[in-house]
Amino acid sequence: MPGERRARPTRTAVSASLLALLALGPAGCADRSTDQERTTVTVAAVDFMRDVDELVDDFEREHPDTHVNFVFLPENTLRDRVPKDIASEAGHYDVVAIGPYEAPIWASRGWLTRLDGYARQGDYDMRDFIPTVRESLSYNGGQYAVPYYGESSFLMYRKDLFTKAGLTMPKRPTWPEVAELAARLHDPEHGVVGICLRGGPGWGNLLMPLNTVILTFGGRWYDEHWNPRLTSPETKAAVRFYVDLVRRYGQPRAAESGPAECLTTMRRGEAAMWYDSTALAGSLEDPHSSEVAGELGYAPAPVVNTASSGWLWAWSLAIPVTAKNPRAAWEFVSWATSKSYPKLYGQRLGWVRVPPGGRLSTYELPQYQKATKAFVRPVLDALDAVDLIHPGLHEQPWVGMSYVGIPEYAGLGNRVSAEISAAIAGRQSVDDALAKSQIFARDVVDGGGYRE
Image (cartoon, rainbow, N blue to C red; front, side, top):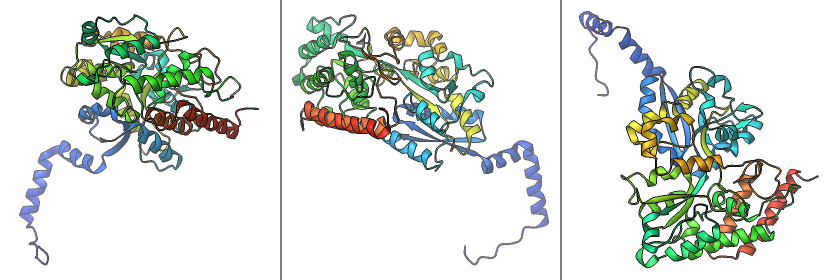
């Protein structure tokens, strides 16, 4: 209480306290020191990585001097906040989730810590990562991020609904075939739409699937001389097709939908088909959270004029040069992307949900093979079919398939996706959306000096 005089401890009491402390031994003293000197590693991660928070207690038991603080963010928010933090040298994050688009660009700017030296220590084994995924996160021969999971894209569909309707999914479907199937299966009166597709704005949202459609139709963002091609006949045909498909046979409020919304729709049995990330199959096959587990089939990404389609992405962990605790940051990164992490994940959270597309050794685990037998082969086939250098019909002056590999694309892609999303919402025509987008694309290359 305020003003209360505290009795001075007697010599006997002090001696007793010292004896009690000594009785704890070195371990007791160490625990007190740990509480005072514990290092905090702050991780900026995408919402889809939330499961790691359920396992991090294992890491903290192995590293009692370190506490991990997660900041989980939606994709668009993460992509907006993290580069600002690094560029301003604010240093709020020790670890950040990025992908193949950011890794080489941010490495070229000197924003990221090169990880090769760290990775050579112990039994981390960088060569165990799927080669296309690992290489997509490198720059000038150096590794600047390591994958938490890797993904391509494929078509997921309800086998039970196909059987009931007397339909068969082609082994290698084309987009016109998918549109015909969607029309046959679309039954909103009974709570089922023909197909679920991303329609919400954001370069990492709508444009991930749409760019694969543009490429397989023969369209492109720029030609080999950096001339914008968003109003070319091929690009217009691709975007019109996508917008018409989702408007006619897609989910309600498609212009606001992303992968999370489509995942919920598919889990509830409210869509006959869904074209999206291979990494989401595990969530659909989890009987604890999905009403359609065991009823699904998987087909390659649909095509038109190319032999294959699909994207490559890898939500990965990187250490910005502004990290306050880079050594502790690597300890966490190496734990979350290690060979042993999938085993821990499978034992604690279920083998069907283990993050896919990262390490080759994951696919050698008998428990994982058994749990993912419905989709493991289609996932590996999709990743194997990726061609980052020549994904469409034409040469392109950058590397990548669901993005343009230039720093300005993040802003450009957001603007273009907003215009196309407005077309999905019925607020403007596809031609108007692409006419505006062509101007945006021209301004970027003119201002960036890409054309001589």
